[in-house]
Image 1 (cartoon, rainbow, N blue to C red):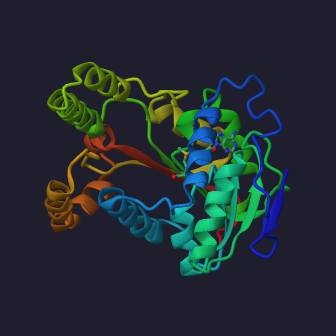
Image 2 (cartoon, rainbow, N blue to C red):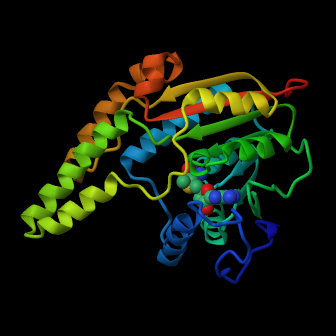
Amino acid sequence: MGEGTNDDSQATRPQGLGYEVHGDRRGSLPVFERQWEEMLAAEAEPEFGPQEQLFAEHKIAALQTILPPPSATVLECGCGSAEVSAAMAAQGYDCTLLDASPAALHVARRRFERRGLRATYTLGNVYSLPFPDDSFDILTSFGLLEHFADVEKVIAEMVRVIRPGGMFFADIVPERFSVQTVGTVFNAGVRLAYYGVQGDPRRGLHEAGRLFRPDFYENDYPLARYRQYMRDAGLRGIVIRGNRPVPVLTLPGALERPYVAALRRGGDLWRRFDEAGTPLTNWWGAGWWAWGVKLGEQVG
Ligand SMILES: C[S@@+](CC[C@H](N)C(=O)[O-])C[C@H]1O[C@@H](n2cnc3c(N)ncnc32)[C@H](O)[C@@H]1O
């Protein structure tokens, strides 16, 4: 395990993981490791496009209404490039970032340092977190839990390190039908058309097909199963809600701008959708936000 703060700048770039993460390595980590290695090599800040930026803004605004306020301590598990944690650190949260990929931690550190933000960076495995019981006020994960078949073990381990009365928050992007499935059909059509015009329809078919065979999901559990695992882990006041009624679309800049502008104009409707928590919004929403409080006293 490697641990450090901004003062401890790791000059050398770590090579590979150096230890087993899932035991049998069936998990999706190697897929991510490759992605972070490429991003690290590219030297470019992994900035979001206009759509992802807007989605992140909605998420960060929602978190302000759900989470205890700064300067609570926050552990983000599977932080990747830590975009949301960077926004939280800027608000005054005391952030610890954990990922099993050394390259991801370097990308996160680079993002924080470029913005003049501080964090503690920990190389670690969510199956066995390198922290004592009851360590953090808040534990977050974004786009992580769907990558584990035995997710109940991961949730139990996460809850272990939250202090009694502290909060668990997970942004789950499950593999199932949602608005994003509709978006994926559109995006596949764009690829077919693009490569067709380029005279390479086989490539178009290949790229379109890949969209329907993502290689990073490890579970497709329904919402009720997540709720049960959270309860079993000792969380109470559990809420799970569908969020984001609109898809990510592959669009050229000239079309993406009006799309994002239209989504911004519909911001109130979108917020109402995210707050509804009805069977319809839970089904249609691109993801689920799940939160609950660890049994014990309230934070603050
Ligand atoms: C889909 S990415 C999400 C990144 C980031 N949270 C975001 O929203 O952009 C999942 C992250 O989890 C990390 N990860 C996968 N398995 C892990 C494990 N067993 N322990 C810790 N991190 C893990 C990957 O390296 C990757 O950075």
